[in-house]
Amino acid sequence: MAAGKGTRMKSQKPKVLHRLGGRALAQHVIDTAARVSARLVVVITGHGAEVVEAGLTPPDGLQLQFVRQMPQLGTGHAIQQAVPVLADDGITLVLSGDVPLTEAATLQALIDCCAGQALALLTLDMPDPTGYGRIVRQGEAVQAIVEHKDATPEQRAITEIYSGIMAVPTRLLRGWLARLDNHNAQQEYYLTDVVKFAVADGCAVQAHRIGDAAQVAGVNSPLQLAELERVFQRRLAEAFMTEGVRLADPARFDVRGSLVCGQDVDIDVNCVFEGGVRLGDGVRIGANCVISNCSIEAGAVIHPFTHIDGEKTGVSVGAGALIGPFARLRPGAQLGAEVHIGNFVEVKNSTMAKGAKANHLAYLGDATVGERVNYGAGSITANYDGANKHRTVIEADVHIGSNCVLVAPVTIGAGGTVGGGSTITKSTEPGSLSVARGKQVSIANYQRPKKKS
Ligand code: UD1
Ligand code: MG
Image (cartoon, rainbow, N blue to C red; front, top):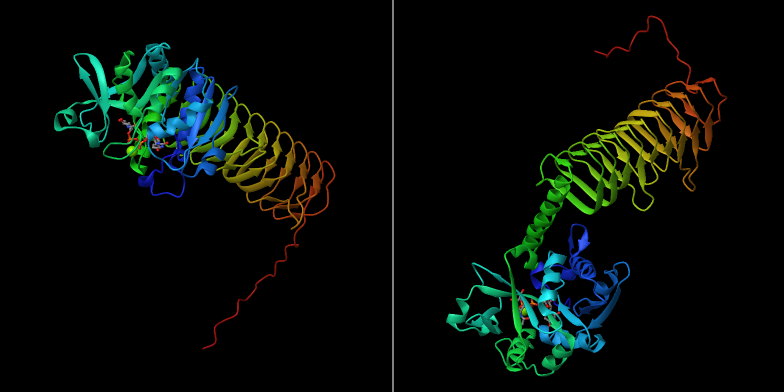
């Protein structure tokens, strides 16, 4: 169910598209459904239907079908829109698009309770059950779910609540939904009324009670979104640490995509990983790094405050490379083994061969840099003529002095040296020294002008 408005988010964006761990809330739900071998995932949309439908992607091997609920007349009405596309021989698992952290194992246990026969409800004890549907039992047997607004004071004292998640044989659900009415406090068609019908029909009702509130917690406000984000990140952090990854502080660690770590990886505080990131054995990430869509080979060290974003093209950092502090690697930066990139150096769409160094305040864009090149402080490749981008080739063992401008397209021949402050517009021969700057003039005993009295 993803048709609701989400008024308390106070956002233009439909609630189920707000992101947790870099993924839309409803995408978490869909991805978890895929892990309990769902045959078909039906997403019920309403508020912002078009945006929601465009914002969700089917997991591998699974079909997503959208049905629209307009207007939104309650959760029972929502499911009524979906049943026409469901097959009678299946189990329907009802999930909410704003409840992102339910674990696949929990859903599987609920499906097992249903076993194609029973109505299985996921329930939970809550110290403060205000607002939730209460599980009304007679002895042990579940009799009904009563919504908070319809509940008597005695029923409101019940602390076992319905999570909003149920598993139900589709053929039975279809019949029960046809019997719903909206004669209740909210004048809505309540899905929860199917419990009464199940009881009346002599169908077993199973309550599968869990203890972990985060698994059924919904997001209604920015505060709740942030709280669940921390729960999600904490779980990930613990999973990484179980695998041997050393996090300086699991509370200051954020993964918004997929992170894969080798052995003996160290990650300092306040690092954010986005998109697909792979860290090889022994990689060390300093504090306050943001690393996106990047592959970092064994033994490389990323010093603090480094920003790496490979976007669609990716960034690769070779084994034993030293990056940062305060480095910026942009899409297409492909750094070989033992490359050094120092503070305030930006690299974009450039390859740097083994052992090449750019240690201070420099820009390498659209460049091919050979082995062992030393690229001086303050030097840049002028890769853009205002209309087109051009390449700079710096062959092996070149030494570029400080504050040079290499105006592309240009090639600096192997082993060559470029004197500091040069603006190089013509390619240079291997082994040559090139200097392209005004000649120094010195005037002996120069007298500075004096102020008139
Ligand atoms: C529902 C349950 C309540 C349970 C609670 C758990 C009903 C009648 N009540 O209450 O027993 O304790 O969830 O959180 O089911 N939605 C639609 N279309 C609609 C109405 C809702 O798609 O017409 C979607 C919402 O976007 C949301 C989900 O259904 O994802 C639940 O709706 P919500 O209004 O939050 O249900 P509650 O009233 O909280
Ligand atoms: Mg409601």
